[in-house]
Length: 380
Ligand SMILES: Cc1cc2nc3c(=O)[nH]c(=O)nc-3n(C[C@H](O)[C@H](O)[C@H](O)COP(=O)(O)OP(=O)(O)OC[C@H]3O[C@@H](n4cnc5c(N)ncnc54)[C@H](O)[C@@H]3O)c2cc1C
Image (cartoon, rainbow, N blue to C red; front, side):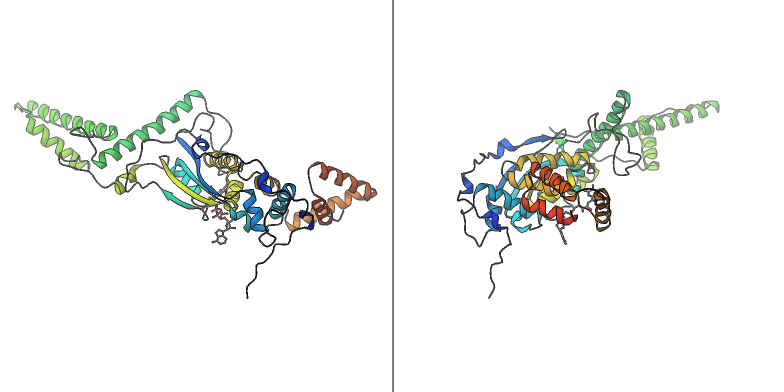
């Protein structure tokens, strides 16, 4: 017969009786959680299940509820994160509504444990919101980090030039998108995108130049060549044919949205709902709020951390202490550190150093167990 398996927790958790829900809980209103991110993006917490108490309850499933004091609940959560007892952390679930550029969503969706439902560009028209980095973030390639940028801000002129080039692409691509959709404005089809209009004008001018040249040659031969509208139309049609250029007919009603969207760049904004448990969120925040992550996703990760902090403050505190701001050592690095400590201790009174370490660790808020573990790890 199967049995509940109890996670081994230290005895010092069983102290005074205080219901953990006596702790002041934040009032959550989904609309108040929305924050703006990047130039047109946002993120909001539209739903959640569970809080610090749910983590504690899951960990203590076989102890029964409400028999631990507040301080010990906090310590239990710290113990879980410090010792990789991660499933209780999954007791909390969050659903976010995110608006971000598609290139950010490509990175976000690499996080496989999330559940995503995205705005359908097959079903609905895309908006004309595109991401353009502001001057502090339009930066040159880093020479030593192939995936990163430097912090050398561009000159005003170069920033404006980059902005203009990017903005031109957005305008052309969005106009082309609307043109391909066959969108009508009033009873008129959307104008030809600027970039095609320019190419068409260029071909018309080239056709006209060709005709004038023919007229001049005829004149040199003493002949009269009258250029008629039909000749102009025929010549333009010839040129367009030769250059592989065509414009749609008057009765064109467009192509499907799922096809027209292929001209939109990855900087176009989309929206999605993202459901994720707390453990996966911690993994996401650890990787994407890190300075190595791209700025444009980092700002979403940082926003999430602050958004959920009022719901799971103890879990976040523990996550920051034992995961996000912690450093792990490889076996080789551990050997070196042990060697360094042993060298430093040569000729020193070990107990004095140990007392110092205990004092420092206590001041940093470490429990007795953490201090003992540390001393054991490095044979102090
Ligand atoms: C700075 C940075 C640069 C990156 N550069 C690139 C790049 O150049 N190219 C590229 O392709 N990707 C890149 N990535 C993406 C990266 O390789 C991961 O795919 C992404 O960060 C998701 O991480 P994850 O697998 O831990 O997250 P999740 O998919 O959310 O998984 C969370 C955790 O669940 C567990 N898990 C999930 N699925 C499984 C499974 N099937 N089996 C076992 N365990 C599982 C693992 O413990 C995992 O860590 C980059 C990521 C970062 C942060």
